[in-house]
Image (tube, rainbow, N blue to C red; front, side):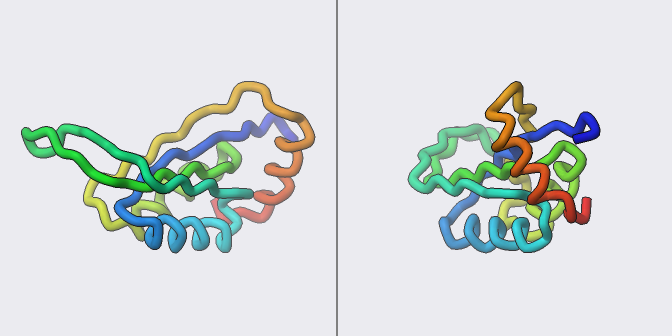
Length: 111
């Protein structure tokens, strides 16, 4: 579709409730075709000079490259973290019918 590429936007949350709330909002804005929410992740990371441990939830947002900035802005606007992990990952290849579906479902995105 006009050379548009699919991307994943990877982000993490402190709770399942927050991930579901933000995931639903991203879908309602037509910024994504699908979000996958994976609870039960354990993170170890540096924060303010110390190693921290946290229980988090991963969300993978499936969208088109032109909407990735809109997804980033929406996630940041609603996120509890000061510095949320929001990473855009390119997709190489994939099942053509799935990519076509993703593009159709995000055609009305407000990106």
